[in-house]
Length: 304
Image (cartoon, rainbow, N blue to C red; front, side):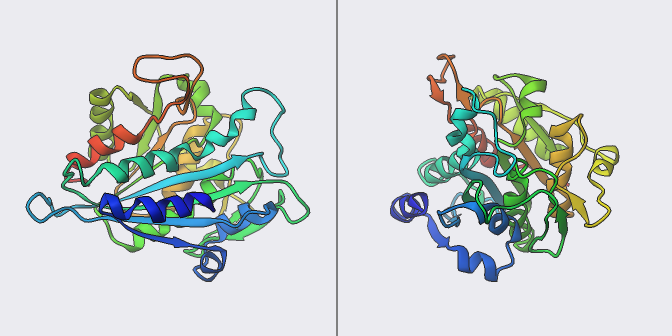
């Protein structure tokens, strides 16, 4: 994919190590989520992994993994989206991955002290005779099985395996960012992103960073009641909860894969695009999240 080619060209000049992996690698590494979502596409998936190691003079000894949703186009798959103006912009479903990519390119020049590994999961989500179907059960890298109730709840499937890879690296924290749920946009509108997490110090740091950068986030709840919405009769999880609290149930899905590693999730579904210029945001794709991530990585707290 062209994004992977861009990463291979741009990363070295920003002081980053870069690896890009194709479908065969993802299949061999048991990344069942992205393989399943990519099933209806003519374009191969890619995993872009970027690594930033700060100079010893500034390094704070901490390691954070970033995970970005890189859905280059989201039709909804077999659960196809309506043909309206909002869904015509589904090219912006890679905005989480774009924010991670942009942040990584700036870390060396800003002398950010935290070591960072970034995983950007790239695919589109298309309908075809080979596409993922409602009712399918897929297996993720850590062995978790997931019953697919809606092929348009694909972002969490794609990101889950990257979160598992993050856990395997035993970092101090994992932060994921994604245009994940329309429910978050309906709850918070188009100026404020949602944040949820298993570590309150990490969530608080992200909130402070948002205040500094003009990219505000509002904490939404997670917990056992939301997790119960994901119970399946045929698998470990469903990829969709009930009709309510969709942002929280989606976060609970991702938390399952983060295990005991301090983790935070930023849902930018409502803020990824701007209809009219607003403050620092121009019309179109806003870039929301890049500065927020950089500011967070400048002063990662001792997380619990």
